[in-house]
Length: 107
Image 1 (spheres, rainbow, N blue to C red):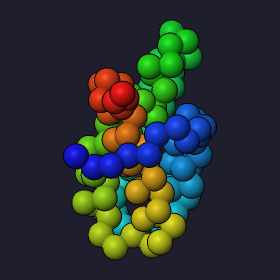
Image 2 (cartoon, one colour):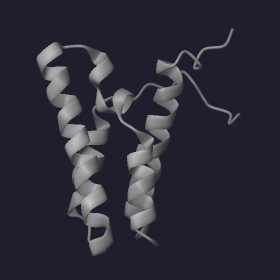
Image 3 (cartoon, one colour):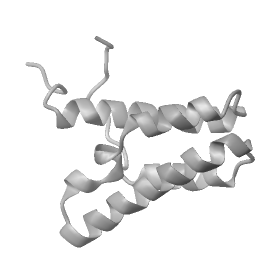
């Protein structure tokens, strides 16, 4: 398994800002639909959080990293800023998926 650094605090809402930045960048037509699906999934998770006030619905914890993998596949050779955003989003979702599944803490 991959090694993961735990104990670093971060803003759970940062994915929203990263998605806004990603939406503002030029991208190929092939990336339009997967990016729209990723944005819709983010908005839906935040709407659910707003309705239920349960942190399990933060997009950073409930998002599917496969959506980002799909976007990455549809966006060959993204510019460096887009590549960094995709990497940050994908790793955040994967790390949080481990934590949510109980695999994040080993004593």
